[in-house]
Amino acid sequence: MRKLFFVLLTGCLGLIATAQERREPPPAPRPAPPAPRPAPQVQRPAPQVQRPAVQPQRPTVQPQRPTVQPQRPAVQPQRPVTRPPQQRPPQTTRPVQPGRPSQPGRPPGTNPPGNTRPPGNTRPPGNTRPPGNGRPPGTRPPGNTRPPGNGRPPGGNRPPGGNRPPGGRPPISHRPPGWGQHRPPYTRPPHFWNGRRYYTYHNYYYHPYRPYVYGPAWHPLGFFLSAVAVSATIIALNDVDYRYDAGVFYEPADGGYKVVAPPAGAVVPALPQDAVSLQVGDDTFFYYGGVFYIQVSNGYQVVKAPPGAIVYNLPDGATTINADGVTYLQYNGDYYQPIQDENGQAAYEVVEIEDGSEGN
Image 1 (spheres, rainbow, N blue to C red):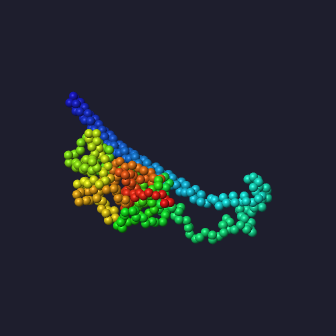
Image 2: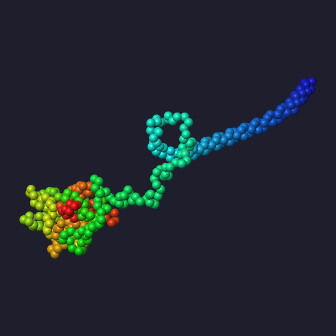
């Protein structure tokens, strides 16, 4: 009986186990289908994220519209510019009417009603006033007869002080006494000042005076040295033992040497390398440091500045003289007039001075 009981019990347990195994498999496949459902839900918000990316592009197009509108007021300001020419300035010719005897006592703005003046400021027919504001036609010759520049000669350089250089006078032909035929005569009228005549070949052209420095060995007039170079040349003239070095003349003074004006007639053995040669007529001169020389057999002789010579540099020590509006520069007793040469360069011309007034 026990064996039968165990057999039946074992069989029942087996049937129960088999029944449970059959019941358990069906629930296992059910959770599998829900797994693919969340996958489509994740893909759906992805297109929604791309939509706002397209929408921000719309305001970028809208700011371009106000940039076109500011161009409209730029065209509108041009309209009032053209309106002033459309005003009626010819109406200012009304002051001609005070010549009527009936209107001088009438205050402005009190015209009685019923004014008989035709509308539009038109003159009634039968007016006897000649056309052209009373001026007979044809009295002015054709073409403007007034010379250009209000009657002034073109290109004239008026000196400061109101004195006009002699440019409109008839030309002259003046050769100073002692000049040979090789020296060209003056064709410009002289400038008169203080009882003297000042002749030049070129027109007066003012430019500021800037002293020129000829080098470290050159010194202006009045400069004092305790000793001169050993290479200085002794030049005895008029009982004075001058020292000459590098284009400068020294005179013994106060235990040393003082720079003085070169004495006329002094002969020096050589000139500095920067000395320039210039031609005045058929004569050749040499110029350095405000001094003129001519070549002689034993060197170079100091001479007076030749009138008509043109130089481009004046040393320190020149004096400015205002001769009735014309500014001259005086150096070592010679007068120089500021000019402009043929190439437009500022220069100085040595002036020929003679006694005599304008009437003599």
